[in-house]
Image (tube, one colour):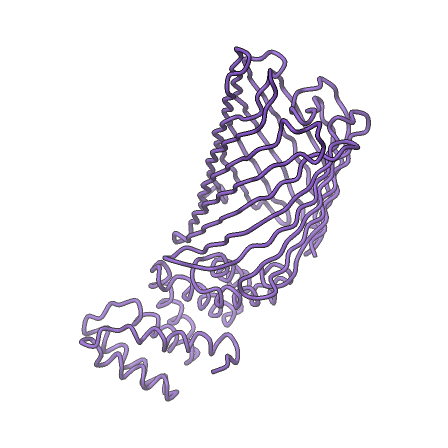
Amino acid sequence: MKFRGSGLFVVLLMVGLTFHIDPAMAGNFEDGVRYFRSGDYRKAVRSFQRAERAGDTRPALFFNLGVSYYRLGEHARARDYFLRVEKDPKFSQLAQYNLGRVALAQKRREEALQWFLRASRDSGDPRITALANRQIDAIEPGAGRQQARGGFRLAWGRDNNVLLLPDNSPSRQSDSYLETWLYGSARPGNRLRINGSWYQRDYADVTGGDYRILRLGADYLTAAGGWKLEPGLALSTSDLGTRNYLDITDLLFRAERSLGRDRLVVRYRYSDISAADAGFNYLAGSRHRARVDYHRDTALGRVRYRYQLELNDRQDQAAASYSPTRHDFRVRLRRRLTGPWRLDAEAQFRRSDYPSLAGIARQDDRLRLRLGFDYRVGRQWSVAGRIIWTDNSSNLATEDYTRTDWQIAARLRF
């Protein structure tokens, strides 16, 4: 049977879910399903209500009542029943999508957009994700994940202590820079996504900080056990100054789960690193990164808590190691201010422990604070500014430094 739109898709799911009902509790519930299939939604509601009065509290009953009331045009009652099952893991994505449709019917477009965004990022059926993305793009073109999307960002900044790659050692020099970032992605179907990006930072005078990287990747969307899963692969190549730098192959895995209005995201990345220039052979090797993000709505705004563990196994040099073990803790706040203004603030603490080489065991503790703003000029254009202050405390005097980096930027989304 072909789908004739998002409404019929919801009905087919409703009927499909009834196949799992305990036969001993059929009665009024199955009468309601039969009336629904015949298009008599009023009788369906009456049968479902009799089942509810008899003590049936299964989420499937409340969901079917919501769909029946929606068909009758009684959107307030439909909303009440969808809200009753929205936190149930088996029904959350369906309920979120339907709550978006109810909000649209009630001409509450902003609320509808939020429900569709939650349905899109929730775990569950990728087909519902695709439908939610179509609704998102109808409300705010380009915001959904189904269509191709991308952007371009151009920034000018000033760095009062340029870090020199590949060591990330402080130069003790101040310089201005130009930063460009071009990115894009497309999801040709419900599951596969392809993406790419180009990033470049050019300093006016301190050429040791100039860096460019091209990255291409793909990931595949699936779901299991209430989690949305995205395994992926990415390839990147970079230049440092006028020399080829590193070629990296990344194996990626991302798992996401909705916890009501909160969200849990787990990521793992394995990187196989090779030197594109023999002069950087000491950086060749492998890197593991495991990250946990917890997103939560608070009275202050949207807060993200993050922990990341990083393990490195590089070739190293005789007198210096490039294989740190890192523990990274971050908290980030995003808050919508008045009108088109948005605030973005983050605090980070990172501990880096290096293996002992030549009798030296390096240890760094880095504190980084970032404050930024964003002003949306329209649907596609925005301007932004941010300042980052860093204090790196190291037992090696040459690696002990403070740094202030600020920039202003313009961004186009398409």
